[in-house]
Amino acid sequence: MTGRTRRLGVVAVAAVAALVVGQAGATAAPGDPGSPSYTQGSSGIGDAYFPLTGNGGIDVTHYDLTLHYTPPAPAPAPLEGALKATASIDLIPTRDLDQFNLDLRGLTATGVSVDGSPTSFTQVPNELVITPRPKLRANRPVKVVVQYGGRTTRPTDIEGALYGWVTTRDGAMVANEPEAAATWYPVNDHPLDKATYDFHVTVPQGLVAVANGRLLGQKTTRGWTTWNWDAPDKMASYLATASVGNFDLKKYTAPNGVPIIDAIDRDLDPTASAGLAQQGEMIVYFASLFGPYPFNSYGAIVDDDSLGYALETQTRPIYSLRARESTVAHELSHQWLGNAVSPGRWQDIWLNEGWATYAAWLWAEHDGGATTQSQFDSVMQAPATDPFWDLEIADPGAAHLFADPVYDRGGATLHALRAKVGSRTFFRIARQWVSRYDDSTATTEDFEALATEISGQDLEAFFDVWVHTTGKPTSW
Ligand code: TRP
Ligand code: ZN
Image 1 (cartoon, rainbow, N blue to C red):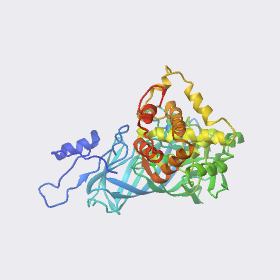
Image 2: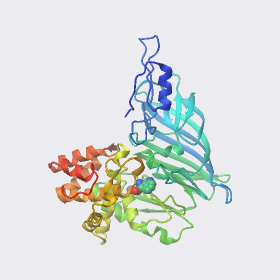
Image 3: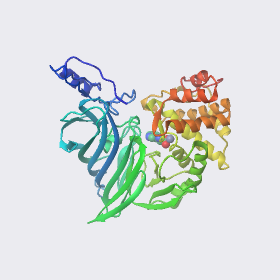
Image 4: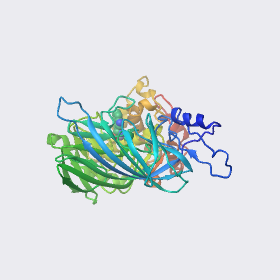
């Protein structure tokens, strides 16, 4: 996926526009009509909610991240860590490029090379701007190595919630949704550009670094331990983690063979992780509904510090202070619904949160708790005058990505769809959704088209009422 390119006549103006306005400029090789026309990659991938997020002109295939992290000193020292890192990034230019961007903020790049040649670069807000020489040819893969580092802090999102590389007293809680991967590595920070990952995270001996995927091993030398993790399944950048803490690692296997590693902060009471007890059964149950578990491993990170929420980091969700069973079901279901199939635009967030809400209702019912119908009924109890009905969930706005209606109206939408098309058809839609868009992204329009195709029903009015307008649905 490439960003849009706007052709501007004056090269200097184009360069300024690329950095300031977020539009790409195009630079024809001056005075040489025979030479290829190289362009600048754009500073955004085209997401309406986050204009500088992601970049145009590149397709990253793999990130190999080597991080050396020093957590804060004991209080009253400031809650700041130190990161010194190397990102080795395999990418494919999607067009001829004389300049391209990666997203990076709050950290300083000290060196960039492309295929081993040192390359000039600059940093502007949110963007690392790289000027490779020789220029890059479309479709010819290159390896970009970025040396970088700096102080780590406690970044916050547009709603004020902690996110990104959140420095804690004994390490870091790392949760990037929607666009905070850029707070800890140079990245094409949008789900449209999924990639595979390797992590090599060095922390003071005694601490544990937990990333996505499988633990390949760890090695201690002179008081520092390097933890190596391998995440070979494609992943959106908002789902990457490399959390650091005082963790105990618990290794076991789900009944269907999925290897599980839970990382639980040693300072927490055992009740904090009691909600993890049924993870294995939950994996089997969701696999029966949505298709085979999509990744090579699973597990939880439960830290003794708080982001104020949990996140479905790929293969290894992160929980703040406590992992409740309903939240555990929610984050696990995201592995199919959000992680294997990710939103094509941030405005499609209801597809993530509505599905995970509904999946947690399904688990509760399966486990002998409240029925999905009673959960639907309790959402529909809100009177038509309640501001709950004021959000158009298929376009909630960047500041309302995680607002209650995105979750609960989203879950209710899926229950209403099930009632309309019947359970058999509904779960066929769910399985097709995951298998058709696995390792990729999809939009609300894609979901409507699939539901229409599989049910054979005209669902236009249904989706208009439930997701494309405000107001309490009364008939559909
Ligand atoms: N995606 C998370 C979940 O529902 C929620 C989330 C991410 C969130 N960032 C947030 C919730 C900020 C509140 C505030 O699993
Ligand atoms: Zn969720």
